[in-house]
Length: 67
Image (cartoon, rainbow, N blue to C red):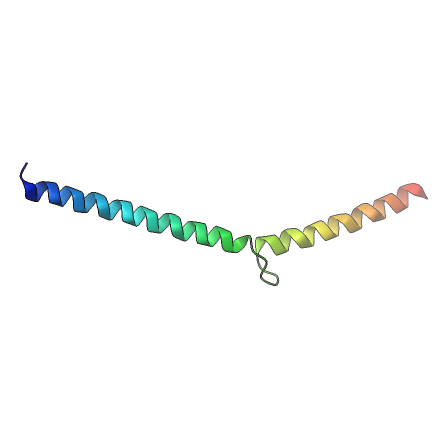
């Protein structure tokens, strides 16, 4: 193999690694944005609302049981 072939392989490998790194970075940013509260539509906000409802239901069940 001559130097031009080696250069082509190196450029190809660098391009593939760069593309994968950009893809991983995009995924990480997307998932991290879902874990930050943003006034209603994030996963964290939805889990918070569910926790509040579960606590309310737990309190209601405790009240019914103690009567």
